[in-house]
Image (cartoon, rainbow, N blue to C red; front, side, top):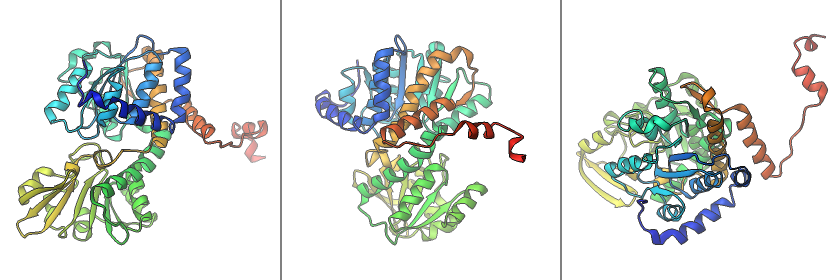
Amino acid sequence: MSIIKDASLADAGKKRIEWIGERMPVLRKIRERYEKEKPLEGVKITACLHVTSETANLMLTLLAGGAEISLTAANPLSTQDDVAAALAERMKVFAFRGETEKEYYDCLAKALELRPNIILDDGGDAITAVHTSLESFVTNVKGACEETTTGVIRERALAAEGRLKFPIIAINDAETKMMFDNRYGTGQSTLHGIMNATNILFAGRTVVVAGYGWCGRGVAMRARGMGANVIVVETNPRKALEAAMDGYRVMPMRKAAEIGDLFITVTGDISVIRGEHFRLMKNGAILANAGHFNVEIDLKELEELAVEKKDISENVTEYVLEDRRKLYLLSQGRIVNLAAAYGHPPEVMDMSFANQALCARFLVENHEKLERYVYSVPKEIDEEVARLKLETMGIEIEELTEEQQKYLGSWSLGTQ
């Protein structure tokens, strides 16, 4: 039996899922194919993903392919309860918005009771669980797909230690995911979440973006587009150089802390903003996280420094420090674009979830040939997703002539 907030919300969830599905044409094409071919017939899939209307359309695609599914949330604050109710009519769902940490892990365990053949993960919690506390559920797993940078980092660490028990495909590393979902999706949805929570004006404000990977690039680009003065904090010299060449000021957090109005973490690491930085911040500074877990802003140190704390609204908490400066934390330090908004637009999730759907099939058909390793998405799948997306957008591209193909495949023609 599913564990959801309210089954009576199902009709509203169905309308939301249908609306979003109209904006995910690539996934719709794959669903039509899967309905005919049934490539996942008899396959059990546990998905630990954000339970949103976009995810629902992925689940319906897998269902059309013949899969049996259990779904749990990848974040305690990202679940859309009406969507969970709608999906619970067709599969097992263990998710509701506002889960405690215990409820979150209890739901994860319930979803894994399916004893899946394939795991679809977003952040690595399900994959980590079957390697540790829920190791008994790993016996039937043929492979897994990982959606995020954070999860891929964790799983590559598992592989490096020789502890990985099955092959994993890093969906995050697909160009049709990383370059679009991470940049355009995170960029837009993060600002949307912040504006929903605060209604602040970005124009003229100093915004500090911690991290300049694809997600950080997107956040910085969109903040600058809204008129903000953007500072980038980065530890990687190549990425820091790229940020500088893109026209952003680059500096360490200890310097940015003194001048920033809004701080957005997008790194995947812990304690990116911590006590030493809180002590330097302006009165009224706003703290937001767009990384996967609520560890990028050191909440323990913020609590210890505060002499007063109160909720201003559902997604804004005020912390008053000893010198009466006020800092504002958004969405309890959890991923702001899902906690305070709708998450990524369906047009970019269309590509990410198309990769998930195609890679789930790839694992079913090829797992015996694969080692216990974290693989990139096969090039042919990445390119198929791009081709399908262009097709649905009505865009035609150039084709190489036979002469051009021969030239590109030759070592001697270029010297004649």
